[in-house]
Amino acid sequence: IRDDDELPGLREEDMEPRPAQKEKVANIFVCL
Image (cartoon, rainbow, N blue to C red):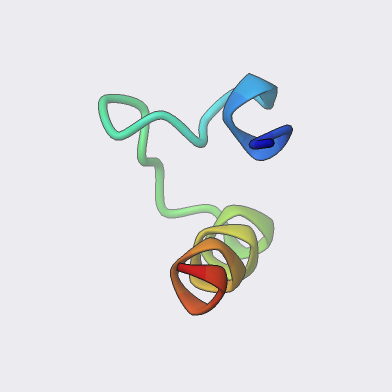
């Protein structure tokens, strides 16, 4: 179950350098 993928900006194509997004993306990688 990946609910984070539904959030905007978390897509690989829309990886914007946002502080909140960096934390979320980091958490996703940690979960992987």
